[in-house]
Each structure stands twice: as structure tokens, then as C-alpha cells.
Image (cartoon, rainbow, N blue to C red; front, side, top):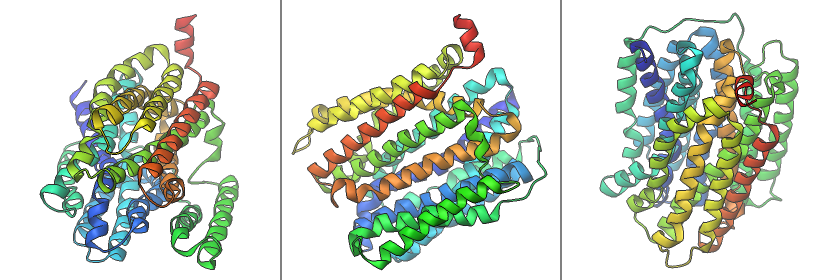
Length: 453
């Protein structure tokens, strides 16, 4: 790996790391946030989903922006915005200010992810790109899983506010590295799809509001029915607009490519499962099982270790055998892990009730994430890498925020043992769906098919 490639990989990993880390590090801090700010489950859902709403809706616009004005410039803007919003979260005196700051954080994160992955596609030649994407996937996915561990330590040893303030350090490092890196300046002559962005935010945000707040107002309340209907209409208008726009922020034609379309459908099921399980597990361990924030975070540490170890290995095997077998087997193995967790009882015995399932989940995730990313991006031409990455990340984030918005319905409004078991079963069903979709739709690249024939 050449010096420019190594530096590019570090920039891409660290820039995305803060975004992925913040998506889960907050989970373990939710009980402490709710206690200090005197709020309940709906605030906990909003702290997570306010971030995911803006991230999921605007990441598409950010992908186009990355291709239009340059990836390095968009990265810098995203890093600065994310850092300022993180400090605002850290000092937020009220629930309302915290939720607004989290939404601004999501905007910054939307600028980071597609640009960071696109610079890998631009800098690395095809023969080394799969391994680079595998390494990016390993470390950024590890950030997603490691977030609860770091968050737990910060909550128990200091304050939940450091969960947000800690973002400043890696952001400063990335800005320094980015200043030393000379990146290709490919740009496309196009316009930003602002109407699509507005419809996307409304189409995602309003139904999520209804799903979260229905536990406070009830389904029959106009406070719930009006935004729910308006959101569904806005999302329908978004799809209508994207089909007819000359330069849409989400080119629906991308989905006609088999691996891209089927891969994103698999992404929706798999990342909905990951978000739901991550949200519910740390709440259950703290609020019902009596774990400290640190122990609740450490519960998922084996998944992080397995993901870091397996992703580079699976990335090499993916280049040889193709993604289909890994994208099929991985989610099914992970689903089996969650089914094993149905046997958990009270008091919770981590070693016999949770660890065997967590280990299988980690193995399944390690088999899945790298081939999934490479299959989707490998199906699209290089000059559209920014928007392709953005679409895939938008699918993942929107699936996650919808799953969490449904969390109250799935658990019955609480995270006791029965609610936890319902969430575990729902997670397993989603993972099985992801594996079956991959089996049905994913096809290996021609070079792999030729080698095996």
C-alpha cells in the first residue's frame, strides 16, 4: 500500500469513525441522560432518532454534493459542523436543546460518510480497492459496536456529556491529516436536488415523530395522525419527484443494477436489526438487569473483536469467492445468535444467557459487512461512487431509525424481560430476511464466476 493510499485510508476511516461511533455510543448513555434531564423513553428514542433523521435524509444530498464540489471540501465542512454540534450536545441544558443539537450532528455526519468512502474508490486501484473497503468496513463497523463500551466508561467514570465532547479529538486529527493529503478533484456538472432533500426530510421525519410520540398521545390523536399522513404523502411525493427530476439526489435507476438494488434491500433488513438490538440491549441491561453503564457496554465487546479480526480475512475471501455466500450465511448465523438469547432469564447470567448468542452474532456480522459494502459499491461505476455510497448509507440509517421508532411498539413500551425477548425475536426475523434476500438476489461478479467454472 502506497503512502497516499495509507493516508487516504486513515482519513476515510477516522472521518467515518466519529459518525458511526456517535450512532451507538449514545445508546449506553440514554438512562443517565433521561435521569438528569427528567425524561422518559420518548426522549431516549428522540436522542437517537433526531440524529438518524437528518443523517438518513440528507446523506443523499451530501453524496451528490461530494461528487459536485469535491470530496475533501465536503469532508472538512462535515467535520467542522459535526464538531460544533457535538460541543452543543455536551453542554445542552434541556431535552429540547439536546435533540436539536443531535439533529445538527446528523447533518454533519451526512457530509462525512459518502465523501470518506468515495475517496477510497477514487484513490485505490481496483485490485486493492476490495481490501481497502474491507479495512474501512472493519474499523467503522467496530466503531458502531465499540460505542457502548466507550460510552459506558465515560458515563460511569465522569458524565454522559463527555460522550459527545470526545468527538473533538478525532475530528482535529482528521483535519490535520486531510491538510497533508492531495486528493483527486473529480467533479460533475450538476445541480443539487434541494426539493428532493426537503421532501426526504419530511417523508422520513414526520412518520418517525408519529411512531415515537404515539405512546404519549395515542394513535387517534390529531397530533399523531396529521404528521403520519403528511409524512406518507411527502415520501410518495419524494419518490415521484426523484423519478422525474433531471438530476435527482437519489437516482432510482441505480436500483436497476441487481447487486445494488438487492444489496440495499438486504442492508435495510440487516441494519434495522442492528439498530433495534443495539438500542434495546443496553437499555435492558441497565434498566432491568441492573448492570452499570460500563458493564452494559462491555457486553458487546466480543462482537467488536470478532468484527475487527474477521473483516479483513473475509474481504480477501470475498475477492476470491464472491459476496453471495457470505451475505447469505452471515445474517443467518447472526440470527441464530439472537434466537439463543431468547433463553435469557432473570437474574441475567451473561456467560450462559447472552455470551453464546453474542459470539454467534459477532461471527455472522464479520461474515456480512465487508462483502455487503463491496458488492454494492462494486456494482456502480467509479464516478458515481459518492452518490452510491450515500444511497447505501441512507438506506442503512433510515432502516435503523424506523426500527428504533418502532421500538416502543415492539417492546410494549418498556425494556423488561418480555420486551427484551420480543425485540430479540424481531431482530432475528429481520436478519433472516436479510440473508434470504441476499440468497435470492445477489450475484457474484463475472470474474468470480469464471474462476469457479
